[in-house]
Image (cartoon, rainbow, N blue to C red; front, side, top):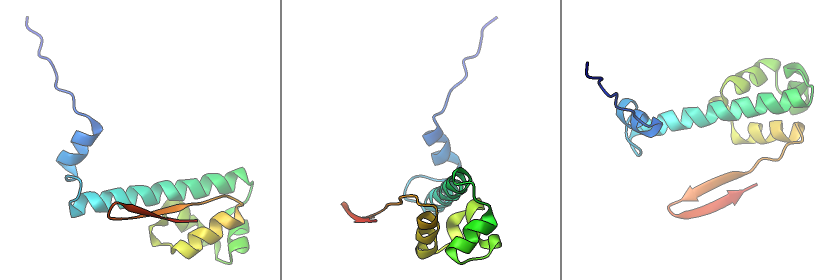
Length: 108
C-alpha cells in the first residue's frame, strides 16, 4: 500500500494564500489588526503585573474603565496619545518606530 505524502505549508504561505500577499490592502489590514491585538494584550499584561484593576488604571489615565477594557481587547480605536498615557501610568517604557520609505523615524 502506497502512502501519500502530505504537502506542508509555512505560516507565511498560508497567509499569502488565504489573506493576501504582502502589500495588498487585505494583508495590510490583517497585519494592522494583529498588531493592535498584541498591543492590547501588552497593556493588559502590564496592568496585571502592576496589580491594578481596569478601573484603577482608568483613574490614573483619566478615562473610564470601559475604555481600558476596550483597549485591552484591541487597541485599534485608541489614539497614540491615550496609549502613551496608559503606558506612562503603568510605568512602562514604550517606543514607536515610524518607517518612511527606507528611513526609520524613532518616536519615544
